[in-house]
Image (cartoon, rainbow, N blue to C red; front, side):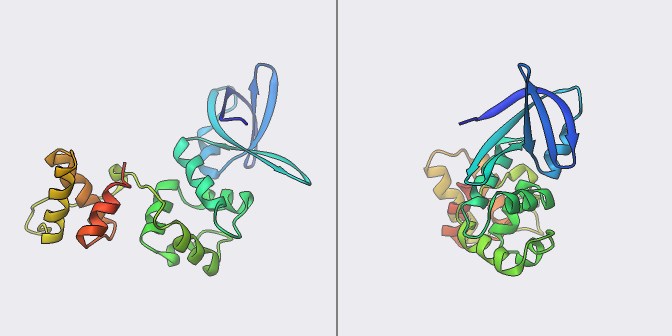
Length: 197
């Protein structure tokens, strides 16, 4: 129903912010990362998700479209409701969360307050093929250095991406990022490359 709200932050109370839009105050539940971006008196654009349940209505806000998209992926997982999803996003930024899920790092995921092992395993199982990571956030080694030689699989993946219209530099960057995220076979590298921004 609401895609985003653009207005003045008039109140911040824990993980709730009130945004004044044309004289109407909308209260949104937000993550720690989003609340850190908000300041009373400043104009802010927050992407939104409206939850309608039998016992009430809640509006959730997100500082970026990436965070909202991750929230939507999280609540698609069995047993993960809106409050749990928001708690997960408060414990780890959306790109780090995507990397942890892609790598199947349940140990890192369970460090998030309130996230148990079984739920972490479900996140990995159900979202591993759906998450998108930002390559600029991945610490990448220098290509073709003595420390990080291109494997045959990486060379094949670069060739495939090039044949699909990527220029050589972009293909190398994407394959290198995919490899850094744990992809090793040609198929894994190509598939992961298409899920990196």
